[in-house]
Length: 316
Image 1 (cartoon, helix red, strand yellow):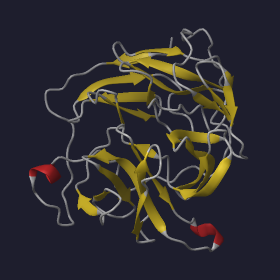
Image 2: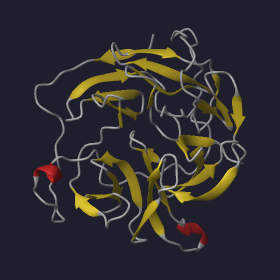
Image 3: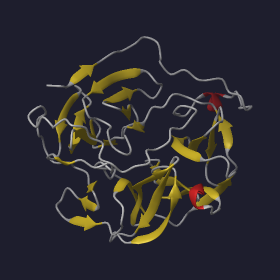
Image 4: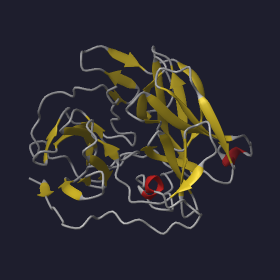
Protein backbone atom coordinates (compact mmCIF):
# COMPACT_ATOMS: atom_id res chain seq x y z
CA UNK A 1 0.00 0.00 0.00
CA UNK A 2 1.41 3.38 -1.00
CA UNK A 3 -1.17 5.54 0.75
CA UNK A 4 0.20 7.82 3.46
CA UNK A 5 -2.15 10.01 5.43
CA UNK A 6 -0.95 12.92 7.60
CA UNK A 7 -3.31 14.76 9.95
CA UNK A 8 -2.17 17.88 11.81
CA UNK A 9 -3.96 20.62 13.71
CA UNK A 10 -1.50 23.47 14.38
CA UNK A 11 -2.41 26.04 16.94
CA UNK A 12 -1.35 28.97 14.80
CA UNK A 13 -2.91 29.81 11.47
CA UNK A 14 -0.74 29.06 8.48
CA UNK A 15 -2.20 31.75 6.28
CA UNK A 16 0.32 34.61 6.09
CA UNK A 17 -0.47 37.71 4.09
CA UNK A 18 2.24 39.32 2.01
CA UNK A 19 2.75 43.08 2.25
CA UNK A 20 0.44 45.16 0.07
CA UNK A 21 2.42 47.38 -2.26
CA UNK A 22 -0.23 49.02 -4.42
CA UNK A 23 -2.20 51.12 -2.01
CA UNK A 24 -4.95 48.75 -0.86
CA UNK A 25 -7.42 50.01 1.70
CA UNK A 26 -6.85 48.84 5.26
CA UNK A 27 -10.57 48.44 5.93
CA UNK A 28 -11.91 45.21 7.43
CA UNK A 29 -13.28 44.10 4.08
CA UNK A 30 -9.97 44.53 2.27
CA UNK A 31 -8.04 42.99 5.13
CA UNK A 32 -9.82 39.66 4.62
CA UNK A 33 -7.85 38.22 1.71
CA UNK A 34 -8.97 36.02 -1.11
CA UNK A 35 -7.04 32.84 -1.82
CA UNK A 36 -4.02 33.49 -4.03
CA UNK A 37 -1.36 31.30 -5.61
CA UNK A 38 2.25 32.41 -5.76
CA UNK A 39 2.97 35.83 -7.21
CA UNK A 40 4.59 34.32 -10.28
CA UNK A 41 2.20 32.13 -12.28
CA UNK A 42 3.73 28.93 -13.55
CA UNK A 43 3.88 28.23 -17.25
CA UNK A 44 1.70 25.35 -18.41
CA UNK A 45 3.42 22.39 -20.07
CA UNK A 46 3.88 22.76 -23.81
CA UNK A 47 3.49 19.14 -24.84
CA UNK A 48 0.67 16.65 -24.72
CA UNK A 49 2.77 13.61 -23.88
CA UNK A 50 1.37 11.10 -21.41
CA UNK A 51 2.31 12.04 -17.80
CA UNK A 52 3.78 8.65 -17.18
CA UNK A 53 6.98 6.84 -16.50
CA UNK A 54 7.99 3.23 -16.67
CA UNK A 55 5.99 2.16 -13.62
CA UNK A 56 2.95 -0.04 -14.01
CA UNK A 57 -0.11 0.60 -11.84
CA UNK A 58 -0.62 -1.58 -8.82
CA UNK A 59 -4.25 -2.46 -9.42
CA UNK A 60 -4.68 -4.08 -6.01
CA UNK A 61 -3.10 -1.23 -4.05
CA UNK A 62 -6.34 0.79 -3.89
CA UNK A 63 -9.89 -0.51 -3.46
CA UNK A 64 -12.50 0.02 -6.20
CA UNK A 65 -15.60 1.67 -4.72
CA UNK A 66 -18.83 2.98 -6.25
CA UNK A 67 -18.99 4.82 -9.57
CA UNK A 68 -18.77 8.65 -9.56
CA UNK A 69 -21.95 10.54 -8.68
CA UNK A 70 -20.87 13.34 -11.01
CA UNK A 71 -20.34 13.39 -14.77
CA UNK A 72 -16.74 13.33 -15.99
CA UNK A 73 -14.95 13.63 -19.33
CA UNK A 74 -13.06 10.69 -20.75
CA UNK A 75 -11.07 12.15 -23.64
CA UNK A 76 -13.89 13.66 -25.72
CA UNK A 77 -16.81 11.81 -24.12
CA UNK A 78 -18.90 13.13 -21.23
CA UNK A 79 -19.90 10.15 -19.09
CA UNK A 80 -22.91 10.81 -16.88
CA UNK A 81 -23.71 8.86 -13.69
CA UNK A 82 -27.16 7.85 -15.02
CA UNK A 83 -25.66 6.12 -18.05
CA UNK A 84 -26.09 8.27 -21.22
CA UNK A 85 -22.92 9.70 -22.74
CA UNK A 86 -22.35 12.86 -24.78
CA UNK A 87 -19.74 13.18 -27.49
CA UNK A 88 -18.01 16.56 -27.31
CA UNK A 89 -17.50 17.36 -30.98
CA UNK A 90 -14.10 18.91 -31.09
CA UNK A 91 -10.55 18.02 -32.04
CA UNK A 92 -8.75 18.36 -28.73
CA UNK A 93 -9.13 16.53 -25.43
CA UNK A 94 -10.95 18.30 -22.60
CA UNK A 95 -8.96 19.33 -19.51
CA UNK A 96 -11.74 21.14 -17.58
CA UNK A 97 -15.50 21.51 -17.93
CA UNK A 98 -18.12 23.80 -16.36
CA UNK A 99 -21.86 24.14 -17.05
CA UNK A 100 -22.84 27.36 -18.83
CA UNK A 101 -25.93 28.65 -20.69
CA UNK A 102 -27.42 25.22 -21.32
CA UNK A 103 -24.08 23.86 -22.51
CA UNK A 104 -20.49 23.97 -21.33
CA UNK A 105 -17.30 25.98 -21.13
CA UNK A 106 -14.29 23.69 -21.60
CA UNK A 107 -10.53 24.04 -21.87
CA UNK A 108 -8.42 21.79 -24.07
CA UNK A 109 -5.01 20.15 -23.84
CA UNK A 110 -3.11 22.74 -25.87
CA UNK A 111 -0.93 25.23 -24.01
CA UNK A 112 1.49 28.03 -24.83
CA UNK A 113 3.26 30.19 -22.24
CA UNK A 114 0.41 29.95 -19.74
CA UNK A 115 -2.44 30.15 -22.25
CA UNK A 116 -4.85 27.36 -23.23
CA UNK A 117 -7.67 26.87 -25.69
CA UNK A 118 -11.23 27.48 -24.45
CA UNK A 119 -14.50 26.61 -26.16
CA UNK A 120 -18.18 27.19 -25.60
CA UNK A 121 -20.24 24.09 -26.40
CA UNK A 122 -24.00 23.75 -26.70
CA UNK A 123 -26.00 21.08 -24.89
CA UNK A 124 -25.30 18.61 -27.70
CA UNK A 125 -21.55 19.09 -27.44
CA UNK A 126 -21.19 21.20 -30.62
CA UNK A 127 -18.64 24.02 -30.62
CA UNK A 128 -20.26 27.48 -30.69
CA UNK A 129 -17.15 29.62 -30.21
CA UNK A 130 -13.44 29.25 -29.42
CA UNK A 131 -10.76 31.58 -28.03
CA UNK A 132 -7.59 31.67 -25.97
CA UNK A 133 -7.73 31.71 -22.18
CA UNK A 134 -5.51 31.21 -19.13
CA UNK A 135 -7.34 28.40 -17.36
CA UNK A 136 -10.72 26.93 -16.48
CA UNK A 137 -13.92 28.92 -16.11
CA UNK A 138 -14.63 29.72 -12.46
CA UNK A 139 -18.16 29.43 -10.97
CA UNK A 140 -18.96 31.04 -7.64
CA UNK A 141 -21.38 28.35 -6.45
CA UNK A 142 -24.21 30.87 -6.31
CA UNK A 143 -25.18 31.10 -9.97
CA UNK A 144 -22.34 33.13 -11.49
CA UNK A 145 -19.34 32.17 -13.58
CA UNK A 146 -16.22 33.99 -14.84
CA UNK A 147 -13.61 33.29 -17.50
CA UNK A 148 -10.80 35.01 -19.40
CA UNK A 149 -10.51 35.56 -23.15
CA UNK A 150 -7.39 36.80 -24.94
CA UNK A 151 -5.31 36.37 -28.08
CA UNK A 152 -2.12 34.35 -27.52
CA UNK A 153 0.92 36.17 -28.84
CA UNK A 154 2.63 33.40 -30.81
CA UNK A 155 0.77 34.07 -34.08
CA UNK A 156 1.46 37.78 -34.23
CA UNK A 157 -2.25 38.57 -33.85
CA UNK A 158 -3.60 41.07 -31.33
CA UNK A 159 -6.89 41.49 -29.55
CA UNK A 160 -8.42 42.55 -26.23
CA UNK A 161 -7.76 40.78 -22.95
CA UNK A 162 -11.09 40.45 -21.15
CA UNK A 163 -12.46 39.14 -17.88
CA UNK A 164 -16.03 37.90 -18.44
CA UNK A 165 -18.67 37.58 -15.71
CA UNK A 166 -22.10 36.05 -16.38
CA UNK A 167 -24.85 34.02 -14.76
CA UNK A 168 -24.39 30.28 -15.14
CA UNK A 169 -27.63 30.27 -17.16
CA UNK A 170 -26.27 32.98 -19.51
CA UNK A 171 -27.85 36.23 -20.61
CA UNK A 172 -26.22 38.62 -18.13
CA UNK A 173 -22.67 38.81 -19.42
CA UNK A 174 -20.41 41.72 -18.47
CA UNK A 175 -16.78 42.22 -19.46
CA UNK A 176 -13.84 44.25 -18.20
CA UNK A 177 -10.95 44.96 -20.56
CA UNK A 178 -7.46 44.76 -19.11
CA UNK A 179 -4.04 45.97 -20.17
CA UNK A 180 -2.78 43.40 -22.69
CA UNK A 181 0.57 43.32 -20.88
CA UNK A 182 -1.14 42.01 -17.73
CA UNK A 183 -2.23 38.42 -18.34
CA UNK A 184 -4.95 37.50 -15.80
CA UNK A 185 -5.20 34.11 -14.05
CA UNK A 186 -8.48 33.63 -12.17
CA UNK A 187 -8.09 32.57 -8.53
CA UNK A 188 -11.49 32.56 -6.79
CA UNK A 189 -14.63 34.50 -6.00
CA UNK A 190 -14.69 36.70 -2.92
CA UNK A 191 -17.70 38.73 -1.71
CA UNK A 192 -19.33 39.01 -5.11
CA UNK A 193 -16.13 39.72 -7.07
CA UNK A 194 -13.89 37.49 -9.13
CA UNK A 195 -10.24 37.69 -8.13
CA UNK A 196 -7.30 37.25 -10.49
CA UNK A 197 -3.54 37.46 -10.39
CA UNK A 198 -1.05 38.58 -13.02
CA UNK A 199 2.59 38.06 -13.81
CA UNK A 200 5.01 40.44 -12.15
CA UNK A 201 2.69 42.28 -9.75
CA UNK A 202 2.72 42.10 -5.96
CA UNK A 203 -1.06 42.19 -5.65
CA UNK A 204 -4.19 40.43 -6.80
CA UNK A 205 -7.13 42.27 -8.40
CA UNK A 206 -10.90 41.98 -7.97
CA UNK A 207 -13.84 42.99 -10.17
CA UNK A 208 -17.55 42.24 -10.41
CA UNK A 209 -17.38 42.49 -14.19
CA UNK A 210 -18.86 45.98 -14.38
CA UNK A 211 -16.32 48.04 -12.43
CA UNK A 212 -12.60 48.62 -12.90
CA UNK A 213 -10.44 46.04 -11.11
CA UNK A 214 -9.16 47.09 -7.71
CA UNK A 215 -5.95 45.82 -6.06
CA UNK A 216 -6.31 43.46 -3.10
CA UNK A 217 -3.68 41.70 -0.93
CA UNK A 218 -1.95 38.52 -1.91
CA UNK A 219 -2.72 35.46 0.19
CA UNK A 220 -1.97 31.76 0.31
CA UNK A 221 -3.86 29.61 -2.19
CA UNK A 222 -6.61 27.48 -0.65
CA UNK A 223 -8.03 25.71 -3.69
CA UNK A 224 -11.68 24.66 -4.13
CA UNK A 225 -14.31 25.23 -1.41
CA UNK A 226 -16.55 22.42 -0.17
CA UNK A 227 -20.32 22.82 -0.68
CA UNK A 228 -20.74 24.17 2.86
CA UNK A 229 -17.65 26.40 2.60
CA UNK A 230 -16.03 24.88 5.67
CA UNK A 231 -13.14 23.19 3.89
CA UNK A 232 -10.91 24.01 0.93
CA UNK A 233 -9.05 21.44 -1.11
CA UNK A 234 -5.90 22.09 -3.12
CA UNK A 235 -4.22 19.44 -5.25
CA UNK A 236 -0.47 19.44 -5.64
CA UNK A 237 1.74 16.66 -6.95
CA UNK A 238 0.91 13.46 -5.10
CA UNK A 239 -1.19 15.11 -2.41
CA UNK A 240 -4.40 16.95 -1.52
CA UNK A 241 -4.17 19.66 1.13
CA UNK A 242 -7.30 20.45 3.15
CA UNK A 243 -7.63 23.77 4.97
CA UNK A 244 -10.22 25.86 6.74
CA UNK A 245 -11.33 29.14 5.20
CA UNK A 246 -8.94 31.03 7.49
CA UNK A 247 -6.01 28.99 6.17
CA UNK A 248 -5.58 26.59 9.09
CA UNK A 249 -4.30 23.21 7.96
CA UNK A 250 -6.77 20.38 8.50
CA UNK A 251 -5.26 17.46 6.68
CA UNK A 252 -2.80 16.31 4.00
CA UNK A 253 -3.72 13.22 1.99
CA UNK A 254 -0.79 11.75 0.08
CA UNK A 255 -1.03 9.16 -2.66
CA UNK A 256 1.46 8.47 -5.43
CA UNK A 257 0.06 9.77 -8.72
CA UNK A 258 -2.42 12.39 -7.45
CA UNK A 259 -2.40 15.60 -9.49
CA UNK A 260 -0.46 14.21 -12.45
CA UNK A 261 -2.59 15.67 -15.25
CA UNK A 262 -2.88 18.91 -17.22
CA UNK A 263 -4.85 20.68 -14.47
CA UNK A 264 -4.12 19.43 -10.98
CA UNK A 265 -7.47 20.06 -9.36
CA UNK A 266 -10.25 18.25 -7.52
CA UNK A 267 -14.04 18.50 -7.52
CA UNK A 268 -16.25 17.98 -4.46
CA UNK A 269 -18.51 15.01 -5.17
CA UNK A 270 -20.47 15.82 -2.02
CA UNK A 271 -19.75 17.41 1.35
CA UNK A 272 -17.12 14.85 2.33
CA UNK A 273 -15.71 13.33 -0.88
CA UNK A 274 -13.37 14.67 -3.55
CA UNK A 275 -12.78 13.36 -7.07
CA UNK A 276 -9.48 13.84 -8.91
CA UNK A 277 -7.33 12.10 -11.52
CA UNK A 278 -4.74 9.62 -10.27
CA UNK A 279 -1.98 8.46 -12.65
CA UNK A 280 0.23 5.41 -12.19
CA UNK A 281 2.77 4.62 -14.87
CA UNK A 282 0.94 4.35 -18.21
CA UNK A 283 -2.52 4.20 -16.58
CA UNK A 284 -4.95 6.58 -14.91
CA UNK A 285 -8.24 6.40 -13.02
CA UNK A 286 -10.61 8.72 -11.22
CA UNK A 287 -9.80 8.62 -7.50
CA UNK A 288 -12.14 9.34 -4.60
CA UNK A 289 -10.85 10.89 -1.37
CA UNK A 290 -12.87 10.58 1.83
CA UNK A 291 -12.06 13.74 3.76
CA UNK A 292 -13.29 12.25 7.04
CA UNK A 293 -10.43 9.77 7.29
CA UNK A 294 -8.16 10.55 4.33
CA UNK A 295 -8.75 7.22 2.59
CA UNK A 296 -8.26 6.97 -1.19
CA UNK A 297 -10.19 4.60 -3.45
CA UNK A 298 -10.89 4.24 -7.17
CA UNK A 299 -14.17 5.52 -8.63
CA UNK A 300 -13.38 4.13 -12.11
CA UNK A 301 -11.28 1.34 -13.57
CA UNK A 302 -7.74 1.96 -14.78
CA UNK A 303 -7.30 3.07 -18.38
CA UNK A 304 -4.48 4.35 -20.57
CA UNK A 305 -3.13 7.64 -19.19
CA UNK A 306 -3.42 10.93 -21.07
CA UNK A 307 -2.14 14.41 -20.33
CA UNK A 308 -5.74 15.67 -20.14
CA UNK A 309 -6.68 13.41 -17.22
CA UNK A 310 -10.33 12.78 -16.30
CA UNK A 311 -11.90 16.21 -15.58
CA UNK A 312 -15.12 16.18 -13.52
CA UNK A 313 -18.19 18.33 -14.20
CA UNK A 314 -19.00 20.02 -10.86
CA UNK A 315 -22.53 19.78 -9.49
CA UNK A 316 -24.71 22.87 -9.74
